[in-house]
Image (cartoon, rainbow, N blue to C red; front, top):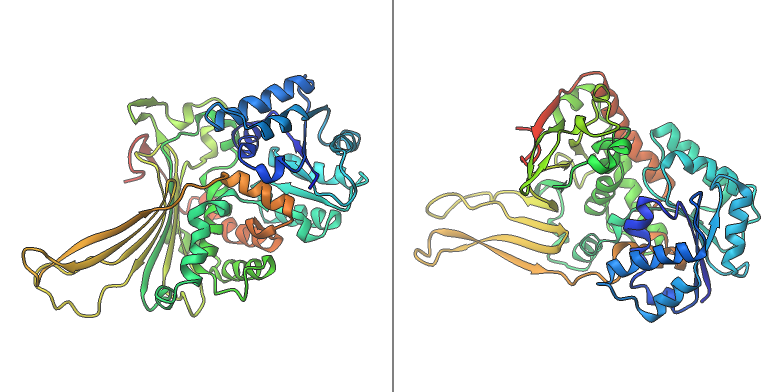
Length: 454
């Protein structure tokens, strides 16, 4: 199959770190004659762009470039120009040299402030029928911005040709949530408030925000991670069983979860949320300056590098179960996992301490799954000890971004968010942002390399 991939912002950080490395192991694409076109205002030519692509792909493939990927690189094309100019976009699409019905992906690997101008420019271009438009998060800066962007996209293309991608949904462990829940009779009957005490969705990072400080200081942890990534993970944990794995069925179930999340008011924000910002410290033996010392940071903005939010999903299945979403930068350890904590047994009949709660842990990076169980002790069979059943899941190949690119080319929207999901995410987060801005929750400080606010 012939296909075209136009990357707008082809010299940017997102392209270098994720999009181009995602091409390293996507043989179904490159073998079929994928045509790569890079677009930006940088002073490059075809050879310069090809060298950049080869470097990024090789860096993700242990220095080796598969011959098929090498052929993809050799036919890559550079288009110099303004990504918001219809003439530039027309030239980039023409450079793909695909037929009207072939898949053609326009990937907006750009700062989110350019999304709307690019969409308006695309509306003035003669687009082929097989075009798909990919938008990276964040989908707007607030609810009004998300509604405006979605309206512009809807005027441009049908919803099934719009991809609001979230690479978290392409992670192997996240996808395994669907198999665990909906293909195992033993687990799904316990997946309710009757047996589940709480759910944690955690994405702690040792990396600091210094290299992205100028962007991060206009975003913060709540916008950057919770509004999109962690809320998407919440939908997979809490959704009702779909009637099929078809894109429309999955999207409907995910949207139902977000619609059921209770809108936070000021009182609940004060009770159920925390925010923090790291100060100078040491992470893994590396000295880290305080966040406010990073270039481009305005301390008076009060931007958080740590966010913790407890949400409630008001459905029969989940009534009363707290879902804690937490993320932070410059913390002591990378911890990226979903933890389902089951309720205590109704009566403790064994000698000694009460049994620990059963916990199912789904680690996102590396991909692992573990379950804590209580068993009879070796020394005294009438006392308990805890064992952990643990398995490492097969390493994903291709990478999550490779999976996304394959899905977009195939027209499969299951790894992206629908318009409703993006807007509901902002409906949940906006009251928290407003209450924080109004001082309802103090901005705590924590040393880099610690476990976060005390």
